[in-house]
Length: 455
Image (tube, helix red, strand yellow):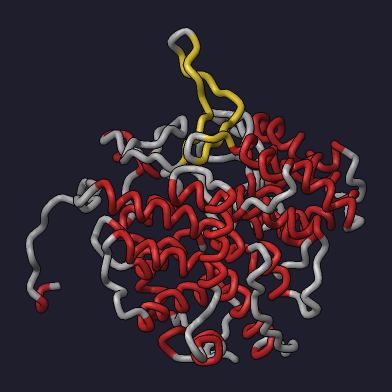
């Protein structure tokens, strides 16, 4: 299904207006330095501007030694608990972790056995959509853009909620739990609608099972035969846990705080967060990594030849390969420099899945890039801090090995991050009644109005 309309066409007139917009909106780079503007709310070394406080998660990338701040191995904490300890805990006891960690982020403490059973039951009860919602909303306007489909579905769900605008804490918590429960359904069903109506594939609408975890249900609903291996479900569950939250300063969580501070409803706040996550500089980065490696495999004939790999990486940085943006996707992070703890946790499990899928050679190429890229970047660029592989570096490969279509890579991220957004929305409502209003300095001098006939 293709939608065509003249207003969507980029005509020469629109091109000319865009050029006018560009000419009159460009700001001299020097002015940012003159006014000491923290572009991206970060300084030149990547430190974020302190805009709020949170109890939900913490990131450590530097430590103070003899009065000087120096980079350290990255650490990530959910409600004060190290992510390594969390993952080791539920993995060692043979459990899926998504529901347990979701409880921790939302309520600030780990659940006991009964609380965990009750919480899983609560999420299972919420795994239902309004009557005919799948047919009337999801299937009526299929699109290749699952994030836009998710946003549309979230905003439409507000129409089915008689207390959509009630921002009392119990009501917002109810709304958040419902959205956490249905996000996997919204994402998977949106893909099946697109695959059927646009791509001509078969239509599958499998209902989730109350007895399965969120990760297992995602695979069950996605696959025609509803089958998956225990390792597949465990690795997807781990991906959900690692993507669930990442400090109060990431773009989509900050968006949640900003929009929530205006007093708006839950559906609008979560839709805004989805719009943020969709961007390729945030949640869309994992697919760019996969596309980059696909291009790399056409240039590198021997995955274990470091020099061939290094030559391609230099071409990337010189804008001579892939998309010409000069980036090695999946390498570097706004905060971490020496290591991203999420990538460290992920790596060993990705290797196991690659072995199960017979893709050891491909995994070896990823390992080579992770090892070589920091050196190549240091040789080619003036950098103010180190670079290392981030979680997106491996997540795209995982989703590929799990057979997830690329259209679902970022919605998969959203299925995890809806928990973090919910926790941040609740925290914002609990702690402040002030709207977040940053300062932007106008650098254009005042000018006189010119009458129409004199222009």
